Length: 392
Ligand SMILES: NC(=O)NCCC(=O)O
Image 1 (spheres, rainbow, N blue to C red):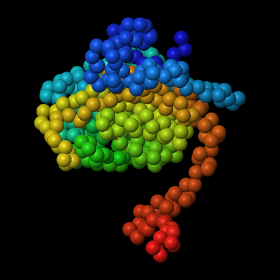
Image 2: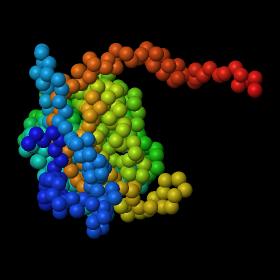
Image 3: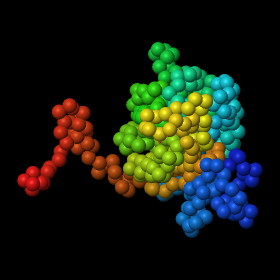
Image 4: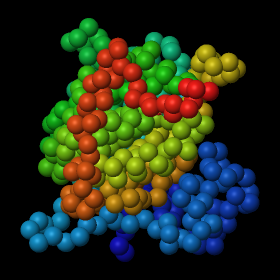
């Protein structure tokens, strides 16, 4: 079978998705009950669309590129893992961490035996996303760059010859115990290739992340690995087109967007922003979101007049890949853990650059000029007012 985008459903006994009658019935929102976190009873937006539209339109494809005369194809297999937490947030912290690692281990093994070359986990995968609470005790989950979760993944990277992107809450003890939201890039030999710290810190709704860490100081690094040039645009950075651009200007071929975001806040944006970025910057994007509802011991508010509550809402998963030619895989489940694997020929990036010439037609000197003026206190916007308005 030419499996072009493969979803390993680790929670399902069936494991495979094969439109049998029983399954079709189970998929129907009208059949017995609606599973929590599903979308009107459907596992993912893709499944809903598949059931209601011509399925061929929503078939997932391997990302192919044209054959070239002078270059061999550069096909890499890339994996994304989305997961829920494994224990209640009231469990001892060390147990919570261990349980999440145990939950991830079979998924990472599945990626390894499937021949994944580059794997990315979700934002702060090693802890509950506690930043809604503003309580400082969650800082205890923070780890040094070469801490527990990096060591855990280094072994797996070596075992499977796999590059792993490890997004953690970082504690930098050498610089006064400063906390960061960081992605550690682990090379295929288990070495630490480098790190990137989240550039844009949200202050929206319950996402009170600046209580814990500030804007990153690592710029827009691109990591050259044996499988290709990769970068990491952590979560909220996906709302900033110039952030995407900067990774592109530094030559990224795949940009990962490990995220933690909830349905009520961002779900309408989720299927659009990464695809836009992939098109505009001629690279692939791997978007990952965590799964489930995480409830915290003490209720909190966010100064928005809404009643106090104890959870963020539903983290809607829906991880997916986007390509520079505007194609994408379907997203995986809204409510279950999952591993999404897809092959991609990185030659497509340059082919799209040659075809569309976005780099050549961009007017960087105009943008640079505007931005340098905009940054000055005496900036005034370039607005030309209709003189007849002034007469009125
Ligand atoms: N983790 C994070 O940055 N979330 C912000 C919410 C969003 O960007 O959708």
